[in-house]
Picture (cartoon, one colour):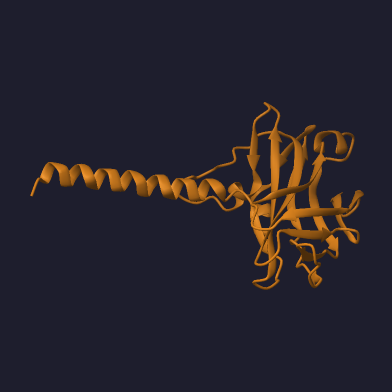
Length: 211
């Protein structure tokens, strides 16, 4: 037996294993929610909160609140200027080529509050066709210029909430329309920020407690 070759092989396997783990965790910057359908017609939501810092760099909130080895991500009090909510969907199933998703009665309610001061916005839905088994498709994005919104507000701890509400219906289509299903909505995404001395920072402890 050639021990040198065995050693090289072990190193190669180890590198592949580490690369595989890194790839897996690199993809986990989103949360996932099944639509709750069946094998014929189903799907998954993926949603993400992206923080933009004052220096222009960005970070995924999911990585901050659920940081795991080997991609440990830490927050060190960076000033936040923007917060963005993104929602995507992926349709899976058998026997259909298209999934028609009806967002007519769906909305995402965005609110910023500290129990005294309160602002809210509503983003209403639409309809969209997804390719069955065609991978993730972008649905919507909600940007929030948090530094502008809180400008002039009292120094305080604020809850920023993106709350999907209403209902989403979907069905498979392939020349003939399939049965309508009601999709499970993604849950509320909450984060806490501090406004102190005119700057906005993430309250990571309070935010992590939400998850």
